[in-house]
Length: 178
Image 1: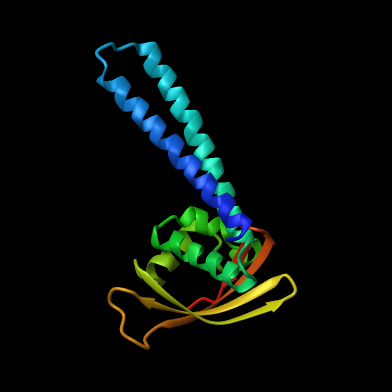
Image 2: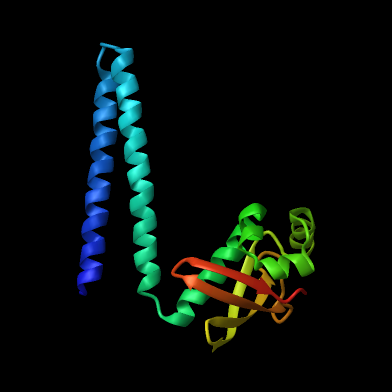
């Protein structure tokens, strides 16, 4: 087992151990008959600090995982996450990931983008990765998208995504409109 994987496993064990301790101590305090508002406020502050550190730790672990991915896998990961934003109707985040020039030419407003997404994409997508090319710092990924619920075989829509990776997990993209 590589040292990175071992390190990541240890971090996960520590994280879950801390989480269990926090939950256990919260349950014990709830079960006690003494209710002290100051203690409760202090617990909320501790949980808030833990939440922030858990979020930072989670983001750090995701970044390390992305760094360890091969080039094609990383670009497929970005596109899959992008389509997941659309599936989950997080159009604001998806819109911000679009290349600025692309937005200017095809979706001048977020409302236009949302309308296009609602009209074009189903609520549950199935993605097949067809081809991958790299040209400098630009990656092109050809995919076939199917409606995972109502779609029939070979009725998928073919698209390509152009991804520019500025840094790990920092990218912008555009796609062929269908």
